Structure formats: C-alpha cells, structure tokens
Amino acid sequence: MPSGRADQAAGLRRVLAPRKLRVLPVAAGCRGVGRTTWALGLACAAARAGLRTVLLDAAGDAAAALSLTWRWELVHLLEGEREYGEVALRGPGDIHLVPAARGVAALCAQPDGGMRLFEAFARLSARPDLLVFNAPVREAAPCALVPADADLLLVTSPSQEAVKATYARLKELARRHGRRRARLIVNRAAPERARGLHAHMAEVARRFLGVELAWGASLAAAPELAALGAGAAAGQAGARFSTLVAAMDDWALAQFGAPRPER
Image (cartoon, rainbow, N blue to C red; front, side, top):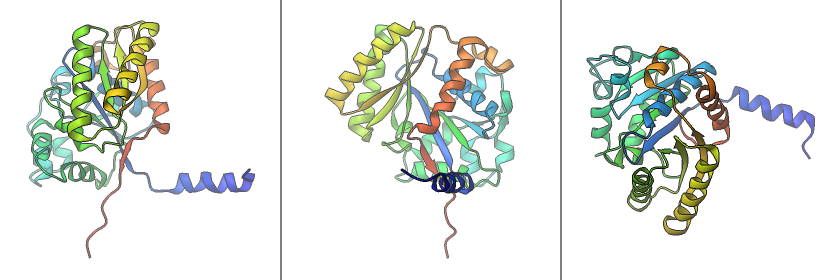
C-alpha cells in the first residue's frame, strides 16, 4: 500500500497540475424531454460549486428561453471577428452563455472541428473549467465533435416516442460516429421506473450497439427554465444537479488544454 507521504505527494501533484477544460455534452433524441433544462441546471450547479462555467448553446434554445438577446455568436469568435467578451452573454448563476448554432454547424463539416472548437475555449486567458455543450436534437453530427470515448449525457423520458427517439439517436452516434459510451438522464419518472428503463436500454445498447449506457440521474418533475433563469433550482432538482456535478470528477469527460504555440 502507498505510504502517507506518497499519498500526499500524489495529491499535491493533482492540485498543482494545470487544469484542463472539461466538456459535458447534453443531448436528446427528440424535443420536449428536458435537455435544455438539464444543460442549464448543471451549468448553474457547476458555477455554484466554484467552477468557471460556459454553456455553449449549440441548440439555440437556452438563450431564447432565458430571454437573452445577442448580436454575435460562436462563428464570429472562431473567425476572429469578435472577442470572447463581445460574444459571451451573462447568464444566471455567474455562468457565461455563448450562442453557437451557426458556429457548431460550420465546424461539423471540418475533420478537426471538435479540436478547433474546444481548443478555442481552452486558450482563453480566463479558461473555463467546464463547458456544458447544449447539443441540438435535429442531427447527431454536433455530438460527434466530442471524442467518442468520452461521456455524453442523453436525456429522455418514459414515453414510447422519447425512448424510441433516444435509441435511434444512440444508434446513429454509435454506427456513424463510433460512440461507445453515454449516460442516461430520465425525466418525469419515479426512481424505480427510471432505473428500470435504464436497465432495459443499457442491455439493448450493449447487445446491439456495443455502447456502454451508464446511469446518470432522474427527476420526477424538472423545474421550469424560467425558475432556473431567476436563480438556483430548489428542492429535488437543485440537489440532483449538484450531486451530478460532484460525481463528474469520476466521469470520463473529454479534456482539452491550450495548444502549444508553433515554433
């Protein structure tokens, strides 16, 4: 067993090691299952935990739901037309929200689009600790910007339509983009029903897709986006968001450091 001195040295190395940007994608197979609520709730919980947090709104609905208006978005930042401070919006709970629908769509057509996207945030002078990626539901390609062996949250509900759409999205991600892992979030379900749904979907994903579908969390009733915009979520939802943020230390989140300058 390692000595106490060795444990202290390992802990010190972790503390002193330069922190990298971690990316948490939040996706869904269809609309109306609570994807944006989870993306915003987790972003706010991460900020409350002391993490510099950016919500990358590739779906385009988080800013609208919070009644935030913008003139510039991610594409202007990537093309050097605007600075980060001109593009980022101040969201609830000290998070930054970056409108990104056009920019992400353009990056999906580039072989190195994901690297270019996340390294752009990793090289910021005030580098975020966490980037919550609110992915659109129209197609799977934006989720493919995140490495296939990294964790991704897939939000669903117990309805037959939602479960079918969730499996279809996971199938597309696995067969077209090589995804091998994800975590399931179940909204509008009692704990027992949510766990049962996860067990069934995890077995199907393992047998037919070769995907590890791990457990994420569930909520019987998710808070309204307006409530999240006004402040921290209370009750079960707020506790669930905070618990999930704490658990992310043990997840396989994609990490990006600032690229080294070319010589």
